[in-house]
Image 1 (cartoon, helix red, strand yellow):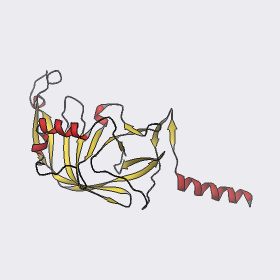
Image 2 (cartoon, one colour):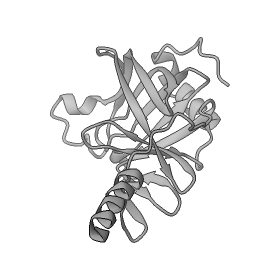
Image 3 (cartoon, helix red, strand yellow):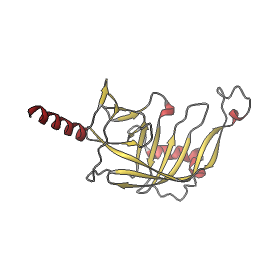
Length: 201
């Protein structure tokens, strides 16, 4: 009877808390913790994403730049995503609207996007990897909706994507949103995404 009780209690704890696989303070898998009582502020915040999470600093990261990116929550409803892609390919930019639902973030992506394309790759220019030439191009893809699942980790706000290969999403304390936006405007990404009427926080 005692053995049965131990098994039942252990099972409940595993289901409630989740299994955390951690090696050298680097956590690769954290259980999802959804709750209606979760509160957090997104407007004016920049979040980074990556396939791994440093369990000490609650910082999402990747082994290479092309595994990472950023979410810019511009105000109470508009966001912009920066997807980093390794050279010789250029970065990709998307926009949309978001809402918070049951502690999770629902992202509604617009059909308009922008790619920073390396035009040298279209021909036989063997020097493209050494001296790439980039051109911003608007792209049109079907609009879609995805979700960032809230993850509770050491009293920090973090999320996980719902992709087949889930990425962690955490608050970025290294970059100011104003600096990122100024760079996007200087590089004409802001205009290409047709975001001139967006009101920033």
